[in-house]
Image (tube, rainbow, N blue to C red; front, side, top):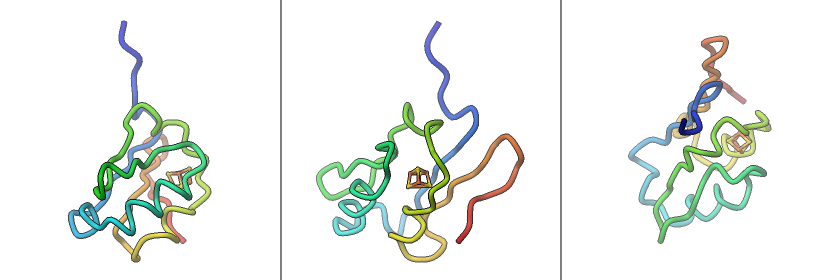
Length: 81
Ligand code: SF4
């Protein structure tokens, strides 16, 4: 059976930052559990790591307000600063 991802957490980035190389690099650098990958200057969310999120908010601080969404699927709320 394939491993299930995004059971507890869903991470989404807005189109407005998806192709921003500086933000892609920053997100890859700050996330302690490698949820963001700098894919040649584009922000990529690594689905298989998403449930490892430790809710540290570093990604929210690294990107413009409202462009990164970390949703806690287990209680229906979204992480905010
Ligand atoms: S809150 Fe922390 S662990 Fe979760 S995605 Fe953002 S940087 Fe990564």
